[in-house]
Length: 143
Length: 81
Image 1 (cartoon, rainbow over the protein chains, first blue to last red):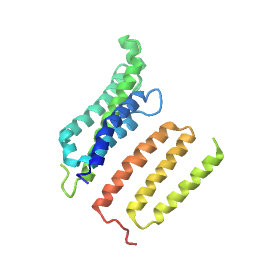
Image 2 (image 1 turned 60 degrees about the horizontal axis):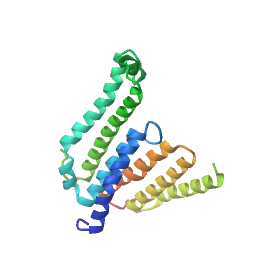
Image 3 (image 1 turned 180 degrees about the vertical axis):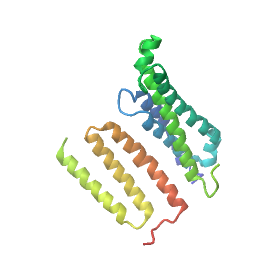
Image 4 (image 1 turned 135 degrees about the vertical axis):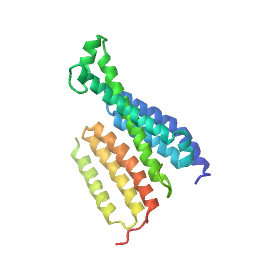
């Protein structure tokens, strides 16, 4: 399995396309189908494909536990930070219009919506990848 | 909505669901569940629920299958009862 050249070549070709599609789904989520959760899951599935093709240890070298913790905390911080900023400025939770009117920047509403989606996507990607790491690890303790 | 297509997809879905709980080999059951998820995706998008269809395709057919296969790899493959 580890020496199979077809699987390795196909997944090496497919992984960038899956990741670009995941980013498209995350950014396009405000206006069409998709969103942060779906895009994050698709992004995590590209890491699953890499785990199947190249083995767990080589994927772990690129995205180790430290980066997973950083990514999951960063995403939820973006999400909660924008939500709480709306609360501080006197609106409801995730009411972007209040930031737009306070700062006076036009079209900030859409950018904030995209930023929240990106935050959700980063967190979902990190947590899904961490679940897959723990499940795919053979017999060892999860660190 | 085309009710013939709906009917065929629902019939296939019920067949998949019954097959998934009657088959003995757990790996076969996992693959049948992935097929069930795929039919469910077609059904959701046929009912104009594209967002739900996307989630079903990503989570139901993708992540859940891999998680089940990883769980089977760490336990026994065939059920004893």
